[in-house]
Length: 143
Image (cartoon, rainbow, N blue to C red; front, top):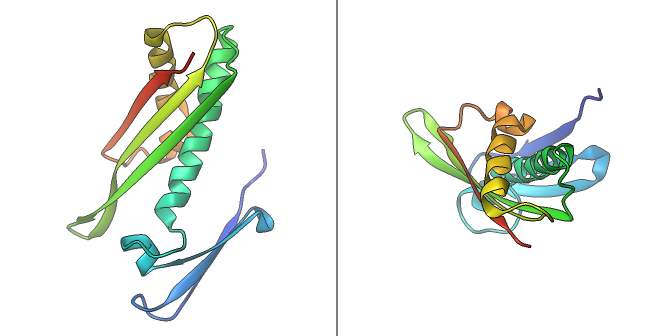
């Protein structure tokens, strides 16, 4: 299996400094700063990148599980909301909410929710984020 790589560079002090992140050999190149992380300034931040990774991984895991059970999805769309909060030793990611919607012929809402809960626990990014106090999933069948 391949190893995936991203790089980040930070210039200057924390306040007033800025950085860039490069993913996938240049498929994404974004700036970040304390303002884009803790305020509403333009740019990205580590939590958005974690959200993107989690949403992508979860959507793929859910599609795989549905397909393996004979329910090929037409689409699965997921939004991940990552919360960062002050902690005793700085800051921590303490909550991630996954909001997913799927078009999946042949199943009902309750079954879709069961698949989503299983995908939340089985997705490799969820496993990597096991230290997050709470990861929730809200699954809505959009048939």
